[in-house]
Image (cartoon, rainbow, N blue to C red; front, top):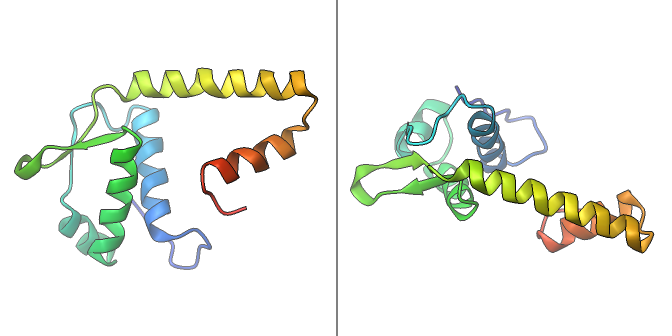
Length: 119
């Protein structure tokens, strides 16, 4: 289900993270779905386990997945609520930028910097 493009400028962990977020958002991965172990997914994709572990850490930090100790890693049950809240925050951010007269491109640059994303 996941594919890592070695020629992409996007780091492999980010490719994995983005694909899982998309799969959760569009309902391909339902809440409670168990994900492969870090080692299993790394082996399947032919990448280092640390790369998958980083993607899982980012996903867990974002509330998309949850780790249940020895029981495994699962799609978080409350991801839909987190997505809805994030969409509302984005709407409010856009409205505030408009009120301040800040151009969308500048607002995106500021948001990327706040999120510690490469600009």
